[in-house]
Image (cartoon, rainbow, N blue to C red; front, side, top):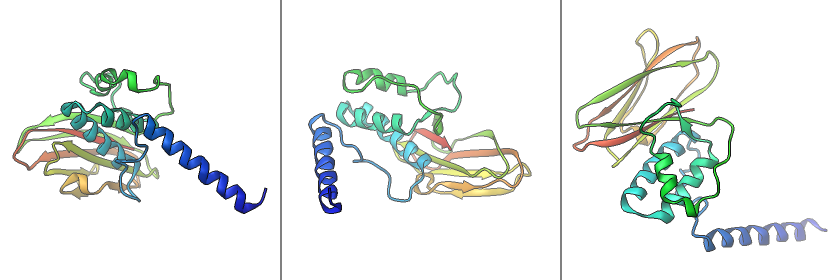
Length: 196
């Protein structure tokens, strides 16, 4: 088989795969984050989009978003999280999703709510020399501010609005970092904080 005919068969296969996805009501990368966005940023955006789709009763968008979250291996940061919405969302579109299979650990997420003017924080251990990415998003999208401080209280990253860009850093020393989220908007929001 020549290189040209091989490329033709790959193209036909890709078209057939995309057509099959369209026929089943999923759009493989319809809401994918922009090129160059981190995995953590994609998970944060997908969690916020799934929240909106569930609230609007849009099962097609919810199912395709949950498929992407599963492919990214997203998991609750704390396995004992009581208000993890993902199982509830999955149950509401169970007929549209393949069975959930075990995956390698992916980005961890935390969900919470913030009233206007309120803030929350958590401490997280990051290891020396291992790149870290932290992203946040909310539903409805709001003026969330994301700040990260090292063990000495030095500001490492400040993003406002938080959904605009990730915080990426590589710790020189293994230490606990404080992650703060504050709601500078006028509405109460569900926030999604993702660590990768």
